[in-house]
Length: 280
Ligand code: ARG
Image (tube, rainbow, N blue to C red; front, top):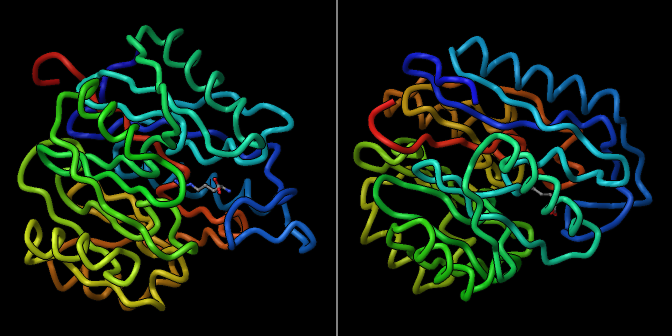
C-alpha cells in the first residue's frame, strides 16, 4: 500500500476503458442512445488530474471488459478506518464487479468483510463525521445497513430514497466536511429525493445543510467529491457551486456529461480509502 500524501485524501478510481451504456438499470441510461467512450475517458482523466493537483493520491484498479459500469468505483466497497465492507450488486449486469473490487483490496492487504446483502458501497453508505448515512429504497437494503453498522462500528442512519432518478444516496446528498470521519460533518442535499421522515432526520442532524435545487441535482451536481476544503463537482451545477462558495468552500467544476449517460458523476467515479490505525 502506498502512504497517504501529507494532508491529502486517498482515492481509488477505475479508468473507463470499457465504458458503455448497453443496459438500463437506472432512469439515466438509454441503451439506444449514442455514447462516446473516448470522451468518457477524457472526462475521467481530467477528474483524476484534478485530484492529483489537489494533492490527493489516486490508486487505480484495472478495468475489466464486459463491465461497462466498473468506472463507478464508489460502488466497489465502503472503506472506514481501513476496514473494507465488500459489495453485492442488485443487478446481474454489475455482479462481477463485486469480486473484482474485493480482490483488489485483498491484494492491497486489507481485511475484507463480505457484504451478505445487497449493498452498493459508497454509492449508498457515506461516512459523515462519526456516522454513516445510508441510503435505501432502490439498491442497498436495510439488512445491509445493519451489516454496515456491525462491520464498520459506526452508527448507521437509514435514509429512504424516493425518486428513481436519485437511486443512490450519493446522487442526492454530498458530504462536504467529515467524509474522512474527522470533524463535524457538513452536507448538501436535495430534500425532495427523500421520504418525509428522512427529510425530518436530515433537518434534525444537519440544520445548517446546503439545500440543493432540483436543477442542480438533475445535472448530478450533488455527486461531488469534497476534501473538506475544495468541492469537485459537475460544472453544470452553477447554483450549487455558488452556494458552496458562499459557505467558504472552493469549487472546481468538472464536465462529467458522458458518464452521466450511465447515471454517474464525479463522486461515483471516486472511492475514498480511509486509513485505519492511528493518525496517518
Ligand atoms: N450505471 C450505474 C448504476 O446504475 C451508475 C452507478 C453510479 N454510481 C454511484 N455511486 N451513484 O449502477
